[in-house]
Amino acid sequence: MNQNSYYVAVIGAGPAGLFGARELANQGVKVALFNRDLKPGGLAEYGIYPVKHIMKKGLRKQFHSALDNPNLEYYGNVVIGNNGDITLDELRGMGFDAILVSAGAQGTKSLGLPGEELEGVYHAKEVVYAYNKLPPFSQKNFRFGKRCAIIGAGNVMVDIARHLIYVQKVDEVTAVVRRGPGEVNFTKEEMKHLISYLKLDELDKEMARVKPILEAIHQDPETGRHKILDSLAKADPKIAAATFHFDFLASPVGMSGENGLLTKLEVEDNILVEKDGKISAKGTGSKRKLDVDTVIFAIGDKVDESFGLPTEWNEFIKNKEPRFPVDGISYESTIAGVFVGGWSRKASEGLVGYARKDGINASKAVWQYLQTKQPAQTNSDIVAAKMKALNKPIITKEDIKRLEAIEEEEAKKRGLEEFKFASNEEMLHVIGLTITA
View 1 (cartoon, rainbow, N blue to C red):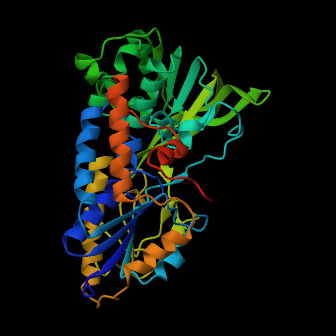
View 2: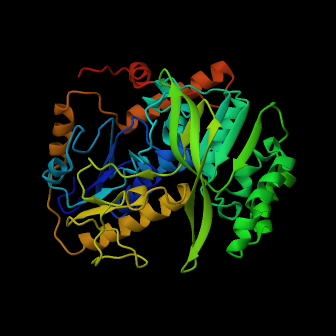
View 3: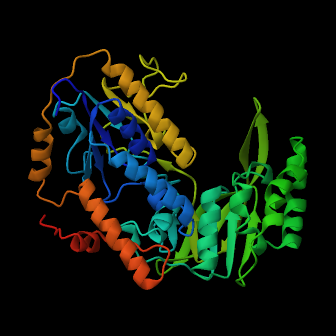
């Protein structure tokens, strides 16, 4: 390593981490990129709906370009955090000039409702990771019954409903939405895959039911109706017998079941309240029960509170008076020299394009910080020795290339657009590594 170059640790190899690491490496900074998973990509690899092959191939090409930079070292299968292989404090003690945390939002939001422990109750992340074959979620057994409810009204809800209808062959999916149709948050491009399963006469009845509540705050019901139906012109043809429903102005208050299996979701009806230009839902006290076999919460994520950075309101605390803001935003944690980017800065905010931009901006903040100090002249051999001492398979850039070549060959053999090994054990085995720990 050039003794005059800076050495930065980047934690997390999703879009924010990869593009942030690439920017720093292009500036001549030596970067050690640590990733919890074996493969890089994060949500771009494990969060995009499986059939979007062209998008995934394009992103992987960009990721390969980033990893090919000789200034960038990749350490996959390494968990940073208080419950991981290396704590954040240990990493800081290794002498890096700065640390960029772009580990996403690894925590799971919980509403703390009765019945969350029942079989059939899941978080969106578990389901999305499972159908995208991210270990260990890919090895989990799910109970997808005939009647499913998804809490939420964003693109993740649409993806999961699509998976339940097309792959799991369920009979009925209901999106339970806390607010009204005007606040749905999915795009027309995503909803076109699902809109054929929505019964228009049922939507009319639901719109009529909520109309007085919307009009009470001077909200035009037609605005929400258009948001939902705008995708009809480009609707995918209906190829399954399932139905999709909206249940607006309803908040989950608990689940109940028999013999540990979910059977009912209880919701409370809401009204809408407008204050300071913001619309919020307020419970009425009126409750009802829906017969369901599966409930999936698509309500966003939070950061991992055991990571090693102070947290507040599901986020890592940022320095409110940053020394190196970018576009007026603080990318600085409360610890000097430790920065946050992507979903680690703001959980569940935007998708791949947002994470990419945020990672790049975070790297700009890191670069500004580096200009204020002399390189610590840390020897990268110290990091390599620490990795070796973990006594577990550590994935390198060369390993990734071998693994992807093997999976591509397997896809060709099977006549598939894409093939992924569903367990770490299989991936390690095919590239000649074994678990020793």
